[in-house]
Image 1 (cartoon, rainbow, N blue to C red):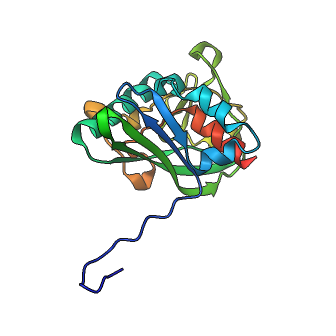
Image 2 (cartoon, helix red, strand yellow; image 1 turned 90 degrees about the vertical axis):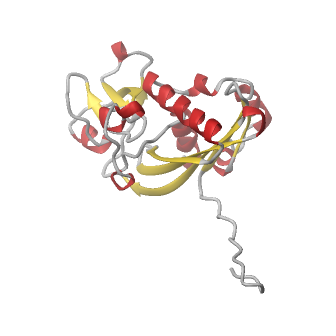
Length: 217
């Protein structure tokens, strides 16, 4: 939009269908949570009670997997030190849909960060992929990459799409990690393109997936 003086005024960016935000203090404690996706997920429940169980906890209490936590810490650290908004793409599939999300971290006053998760695209998986989550590798049969959502079966070397894993007859019981193709911290692996859905992506946690499942049920 152009004003009468010829200057350009940007229109506000519309909020996507699914959003969740966490406002963090300098120690990464959650001091606020909200967004359209969060509101939909808790519809019919006491929002104050649910917020009360989350606010005051560490963000990393809700993050699964050593490498996922490591990537997220670096992501937040860069946002704080550079004082610019950082953005990363990642996959956050539901049982029925392949979902590409964007994570944004914006530095705020006193070392705080606003962490947002916004849906970019969604398309159906070829078959439903029900997931169960294990606490340790001993009780899991697969690893799930927190960024690209591909699965690696116990004893396998290849990472495959979730629907391909299920099509092989297995029911995934997963722990979270970051696959070698997605590891980009200090050059551990080569960054993949966003078009391939293997961007240098940071995922909060399985809570985002659970919120989405509940909002779509």
